Image 1 (cartoon, one colour):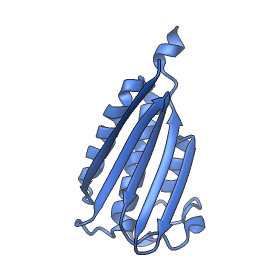
Image 2 (image 1 turned 120 degrees about the vertical axis):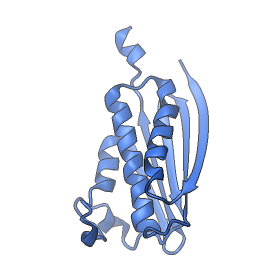
Image 3 (image 1 turned 45 degrees about the vertical axis):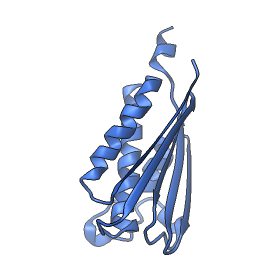
Image 4 (image 1 turned 90 degrees about the vertical axis):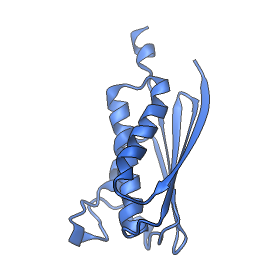
Length: 148
């Protein structure tokens, strides 16, 4: 079965919107009938990316806007999370496991590592003073296909 569908969501860069974003994307991807593990992976990467935008991109400035776009093509979910925050100084360093630019907040520095491990593809583009775009995708192994 082949689906093609899309959604776009914009919200204020407030920490309480992280759960809203996670649940909204999970509801959208549910039409592909993901396994619980796949759904958990997607919810986790949404949480990580949105939290990064809030804490690092906007530095907890609640006036920022985060945009999530998701599209389904056949059995794959493509997700883009974008902010117009400060950008990332050194993307290679930021991608290293355990690196955090906010150690005083007791951040684990595992956000990008988690995204990379839970998704099939991860691309990050950033521009200082203009923001960051995180693009990721994951092929969903439909439960229906597993039981047929």
